[in-house]
Image (tube, rainbow over all chains, first blue to last red; front, side, top):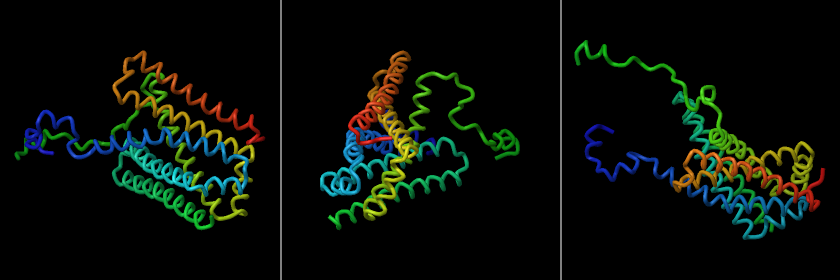
Length: 128
Length: 142
């Protein structure tokens, strides 16, 4: 951003980010708030499934409402986790090449978790 | 640009120390909470991966699932689940703390300290309660 751009900005627009940042801030808060009920539900799910073996776990996951909750929890968690790891990498990795590569790996990991979950849920759905 | 101005330009900056400076700061509870929030968040990544592996094993059928549960229910496996649940609950209550701070509340040095202490304790309490109920109902046994 050049100085001329800076002069063009009104006092109100200073409250917003020049390029981006506000979107990330909102996304972090949105995923955080959504994950409060979702992780509490996940704890309840873990409690329900514990000790019930293959049949119990399959019966729990096969229920459409539980399936939707698992999908939502994993999707929002993967998004939240990508943003969180990216911030840590941005803070600690000074070399831009290494930083970019690690952020790319983080994105790949988050996407892999979503794809694996979606595939598993689809297989369970087909079998049910 | 003249030769003179070029000489006054700052030299190419070598590697600077990156945040945060653990060796320099005096430890205090909000700093501990901040560090723990990152540590527990990172540890929860392992939890997410493990849950995805669990779900894939379930989808692959009885044999694969039985192998997963055999490992998951050993004392070492339970210790891993316990650690992951502790990380998850501390990150959850730490997230609550940050959302409270996001509203602009509890920013005074004293209230920020006590909010951090209480959310950390709540995270530990939730974990202990969770496992107490798991063992009390006989769902998990050593």
